[in-house]
Length: 384
Ligand code: COS
Image (tube, rainbow, N blue to C red; front, side, top):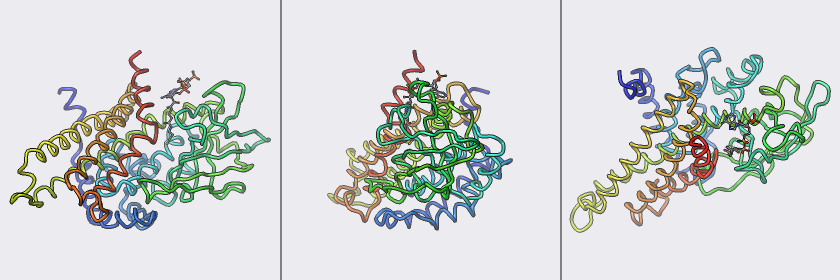
């Protein structure tokens, strides 16, 4: 068997599950997308539906109540949902991002306490790393924690955190040893949203992914037990980096879904729209655009699936591949959605049609979970 055949053997049951999710996305998510974007409204109904359909169990192993189907299946699901609506796809992406620190590094007690209730969809998590002065450089964070007996006291705030105000708990990164040097004396904690001293600060008004709340969780003398430390004290930077090495594939899948959704919409439009007496897809200018869009999506998908398989196999170069997939898929999303708007012309620019939303939603995929400049840096480091 060739290496390629090995990489792309996808079990039939996974393809069937993907088709079910695609149908849910078409029939239930797509009709809500314009309204929740316009109102910047979190779709609690869709989250409940995902929980009922086992979709929120996708990031989790069977022993923690999940589907145990791995990273490729998870990201095929993210792609299908993002074809209909990128904000709604984030519900599933954050279910992974906000729990990966516990899944990868948490104690057995933490895993049992948090993962099964996320797998059923009862709880929503959040991943709180970035700060106002520490985005691309999280090693320069200033949120700190000090030990007091068997507890830690956390002070500071985080910025641009998805699920702020929705999450039942936050995986928070804080400096615990100021002397250790940049990126080193940092510890990861679980902070439940009902702990005294926790509050929700500013919520952002955004260009895209408007139906997903992004904001500033604030920690004012928040006490957590030592049992809430994820992994080892002062080793939290590695918890964050190893999480992002995997979760960036969610962004890649979201970006690909946006790109394929825009391509499909533009192709369907070009079949129907007539100018100069014939459908515009009979003009070579439109044909070439659509051909390039479809080709870029297909290439992005191959890289994404390969990177997902690397995570599922725990290959040593998984971080490089997830950075490459995130970079390529998100650049594809931006390029393709701009072209989709162009193909729809004046209709592309108005909110009655979905492609302007897709173009707005695409932009964040080049920025969050590490800007594409950071992805290039990660890739370049692997070549040294
Ligand atoms: N997995 C595990 N450990 C890692 C790692 C990874 N992918 N990358 C770095 N580390 C470790 C290093 O091995 C080093 O360990 P030691 O202390 O034992 O030497 C430590 O972490 C510090 O590494 P480094 O010096 O390379 O850290 P930098 O501060 O230079 O950071 C980048 C490197 C740029 C890769 C990092 O800051 C980054 O990923 N930035 C983007 C952050 C981001 O994605 N923000 C979005 C937030 S979520 S929306």
